[in-house]
Image 1 (cartoon, rainbow, N blue to C red):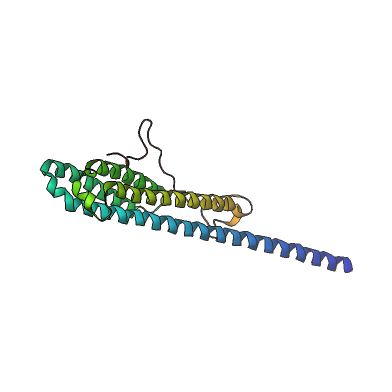
Image 2: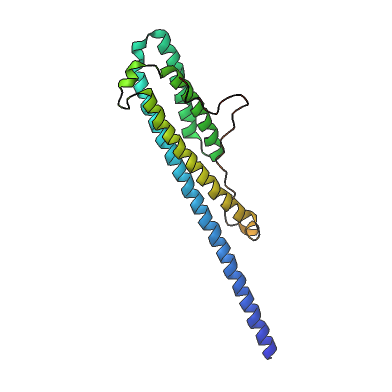
Length: 200
């Protein structure tokens, strides 16, 4: 009789330990998921800040460009429209992969805008002082985004590893913990710079 009781107690203790272990695993998944969510929110906020800077630049260019003649203004308007289209794609992108692709496109068209608008004399009198000042402010925003991308991707890696390994892989999907996408910037084709933002 005592042996049976000891077996029940031992079985109960083992079941309790397993339950606590599973609960801790679920807690880890939940915590890592929240950290990844927060990282994504931070990244989106930094992307939005840069987008606001770009909108300010576009507004300044629109104010000063009409003084430069029809041919110059026509070419500039093409680039302004490309920036607006790229900003729209970035705003509409819902997933990290789509945002990364839209971000790369925006960086490229922004470089072409600087190449065209960088010589506007009136832009030098704008509140930021010069085309170089605009570039510095946008470069600072880009560095901030790069840092946020790195942190977000690290959090996503940890979370995805947690739900891929045993025991997480057994019940992660059942509990709604699905793999997260990383924010991966597309690589530039061979021979092309990743950004044209420093062109004049």
